[in-house]
Image (cartoon, rainbow, N blue to C red):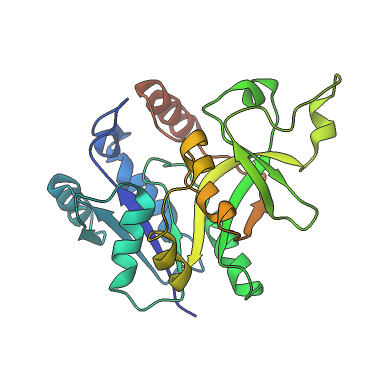
Length: 247
């Protein structure tokens, strides 16, 4: 079974343009992501998918693999799918291009979910919510999970609604912080990007809702690892400090 990791990377960002090229202790952010992904044992190959020539050249300069994609791609998933059309592989892992601390073990774990269960077309990752601030923060996407480990709903709002006072521990793995890492079977991925946007997807501004609204199950792999998405310059400084302190 062939598994390929795709890192969609664009230059434009509303809050932090050019963030994937930002320096992190002597290396561009995209290189940090690439090097973490390279450590994932189940991946047969890693590619950066971008529509920006500067990003393409930077990846080539650190001897990574990059491929140019259309500037018409609306999302990272569209970019991954465009690359997948021209590649012969069974599973594609969509690795966020702005998460330089992503765990290689988690990347392999999300792919393993599709290897172990042939009925699953899409899998993603979440970790237990550990702070009240995460529940209240709309930038933290929450996922509610059923007894079989499949997503019931994703939201930026606090879900489930807690009618009476409840300790975070009581939520257990019912509600978790969603980590934006996905594994797709090739046929599902190519079909998914052809589907029309759905009502809840538009309301929540969460692409994965399209799969749920069309009747697909999303397997949620639980991990204790966390990852920091670099959306702002403050996030960048957090990552720099973490790496500096870890040596």
